Image (tube, rainbow, N blue to C red; front, side):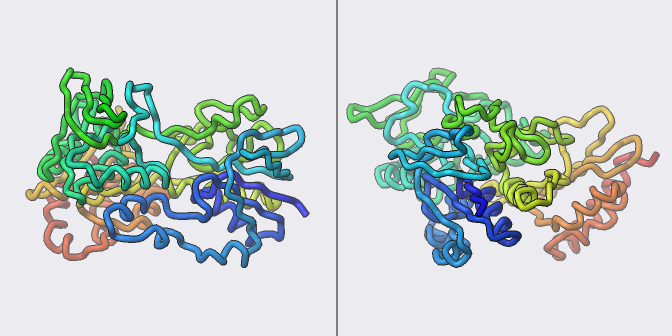
Length: 429
């Protein structure tokens, strides 16, 4: 019986296992060093904030794996031998495979800051990070969060929920302005400050300073300021967790290099999820996308290939969602922080400063290109269809109420959104 081994039990690896089982009776083994059972990594913050327990983050009963004949191994893969088609685990256990899926995910970025390995320093990438944060919290009155992306704002919200004072170091001129246009970025600057956060823009970490017991007691910034704290949270992005694959013969770049079928350069070895690096560029997309839904889609795709239906990975239109404290964010299609030459943006912001939308469109053809929404919950299906069908910006503006989860919002603001658009934005070809 063919043996499929999967390294990693995140959303990508587990989705691959589930779909291979649906399609075949192959022997399946999942290896994970982090946790025995699959859990929702995006829920780590809600465990810390007391909204749920760890067991609530496991979408399957523990018996699910045995019932579906999926063998789980808790262990750390030290080496992959492509010649003998085997894995060596820490402790010298050997596991042989016929087909191998590498879905080992990401780790927090570290930039060799002095003091980055002190007690009291953590990220938010793994279950161990959450456990460290819980260990450090009881003695903490103030914390420093380093890095102004999605993980940084999550950590800030988590710490605020424990009444911990937060200083937020962001190297950019405005929060997340490498992704967001100025209007949305400035809205979030104000929102973060309103929550009592000490937001330090254009400020980087220089050093973490230890006390006499080897624990973080303060940070030194790029502006030579010393900020006292008991916890330092590093949230400067993630990178593929691929060190164990060095010298294996599997082609590596920033991640594990794969073609459009998620195949590596070694026959019968595949890679999916945060650690997979696309060799052939997908339109407008990054070579590595550390996003939950793309990991799930890769898992579904590679399962088809392994079970005899060789399928090309096609993630479709980009979308993502997040939460900035109590403001929900969704994006569909592509909204660049600065419009490209052929693009125009329509921006509407509510007088409360807590809700806004931005629509991008081709100024030559009026084709709808993408939308950002803050404080408004939208339906994915509407925008996915509009992008797939190359709908016009007029169509999207005229039909926004079809996309909204909250009709009350549009009974109040839809006329304003539409009126401003047609009065202000010239877009007709």
